[in-house]
Image (tube, rainbow, N blue to C red):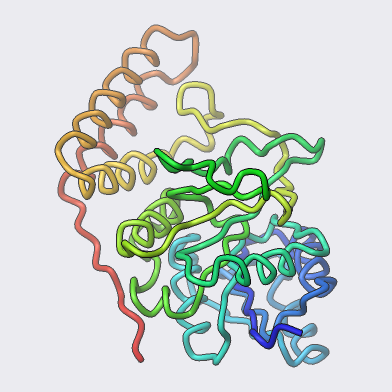
Length: 301
């Protein structure tokens, strides 16, 4: 039997019922977790009491209770920092609405026997009806992306934090997710950082490692059509993705800026409400991204 140990890092905020389902799925894995770190972003729905109760029943559970909501990015930073203090070989990073199928982690472990040196592996993320989850489609690598497709493996460059499997030495090398992102794009930046850091490691999507993303709707996010109460978070999207594009060079930031400007015109031509607010948030986020220079935190050995 494989002697590797795996840690889970879950970030949660006011989703107690989904959190219960998420932890149930983690506990049913055919390859068991050595530790389960749950970062609670100052929930007020009873999640903290539930985690304290579960901690007494399961010595593997390691809850972290944050004083303030520092977003998914800050939560994953805290969780991976705690993972670094364990002796586990790998970490699976996921949101609280990620429901892993029973053999999800075992498929990762089996894949390490064929691909012992990799940057990250990500799961095959599906929605409730079995279709691909539109918010969690990884970026497929250019060139020889299909080298292992007959084995259900595709080379990718980036993915979301809905079940991504990362070796300890990779976290040590590249550091932690950027807390200052708060929300949106922290997973894209982090997996992209891994992809760019290593010249001798590839990253893979495993079709056999399946996870259900328990979202209300299987739709992609869009500032044009999204509800008014969700508009504020788009500031972080345009700021953070501007930063990610800047790091890739002039060509990428030019493309991203042009795409953002075109989105403004689409908002103005659309039949959506609150056009001024939508445009204002986009412009503010985009321009903030040009001066946004967050610090990448390194793991202490």
